[in-house]
Structures are given as structure tokens and as C-alpha cells.
View 1 (tube, rainbow, N blue to C red):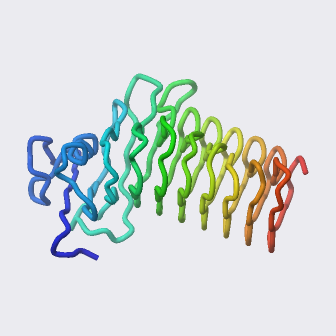
View 2 (tube, rainbow, N blue to C red):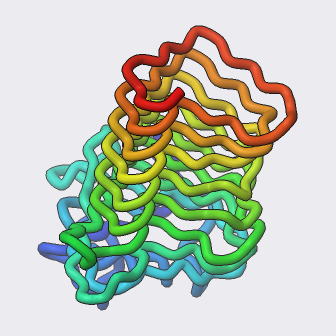
Length: 268
């Protein structure tokens, strides 16, 4: 809930202006400008950036701040600005095949993204490359809630750089040109109530000691889930109709798998 010491900044692509102050009555236009307010120290721990409506993104949004700020970047109801589960859309309209959002400093920890649809608008070889890409090592404790990563030329989310304790809660990864989630060199992810559907490569390509629960891996072009270095805990999940294996585990460590179903996969 909102608190008296919490600052809230709004973005409205249709009615905002990046020269405004970011209040509900005078919102910023773009998320890129709002994120720059983290870099310059305006936005601090506990503050919100609320995106209302649909924003067209034509070039990569870079989060370049160098301090650990626990801020929430979230979609909000465009009629009242409240965070009520309404998802706002960021849709790629650029000419370059580039990531939509890059996290590009190793001290970026603890950001939370929620209630957003990231749409890469891919058509053939054109469109955004990734929804979110972590480009340097050691970004930890990131959270993604009620998100959708769809229609990117490569992966919906890409991080292979020791990004530990990333949480994906009630997210969907679908119709991406490679894997839905590409996170092979990571540790201790928590992936709960997520759907990995109709990605051209793996549904999820996941690192060590992750926790998967209540997930669905369906109709992916290779394995439903491919996990590395074992140490997994996988519970209450469904692996259905994948072109490769339902689940592949690479590595020699022990894993615990309970109460799962594998149905109509073309591999194992």
C-alpha cells in the first residue's frame, strides 16, 4: 500500500511530457525518463514508477544508475493510477533489433517489475531482441511479478551473468524466437506460477539450484525446461507437448521433483 514517505511517479505515453514533474496530473511520457530519475537521485528506496496505458518504445531503455535502489516499476490503472493488477504494455516500434530494457550496472539490485506486458513486436528477423537483458555480472535479488514477455526475436528475459535470487511470480513467456527465459549461469531463482508457452527454443533455460513450482511448460520448440548443474526443486508443474524433452537436467547434483506431469512431449 501507499505510505506517506513514498514518492510515486507516473508515466503516460498518450498524455505525458518528460519535462513535467511526474505527478499524476503531470506525468512523464516515457519510462526511460523515469528511470533516469533513479540515476540522478530523485527516485529512492520504496518509490514507485507507474506506467499507465501503452507506451511505444523505439530504442533501448537503459537503467544506468549505480546505487542499490529498491524501487517498483509497475503498470497501473490508467483511469486512477492505482496498482490493482492492471497491466500496462511497452511495445517495440524501433527499427533496430535491440533489447527493450537493459540493466547495465553491476550494482543494480532489488528492483521490482510488476504488471507490465513487454511486447517485442517481432516479425521475421525484425523486432526487439529481448524484453529485459542483464548485460553485466552480479545483479541480484530482482523480482518480476504479473509480467508477460512476448514476441521477441531472441529471449523474453536474458541473463547469463551470475544474476542470483531472481524471482519470477505469475509471469508468462510466450512466442519468443529463442527461449522464454535464458538464465543458465545463475543461481537460486524462484519461479512460481509461470507459463512458458510456444517459444521457439526452450521454455526456460535455467541455472543452478532454482525452485520451480506450479508452472506450465507447453508447446515449446525444444525442451520445456532445461536446467543446469542440478540442485533443483521442482514441484506441481506440467510439461506438455514440447518438441524436445519435457525436462532436461544437466549436472550431477541431486534434485527433488514431486507431483509433476509429463504429457505428449516428443523427446523424453
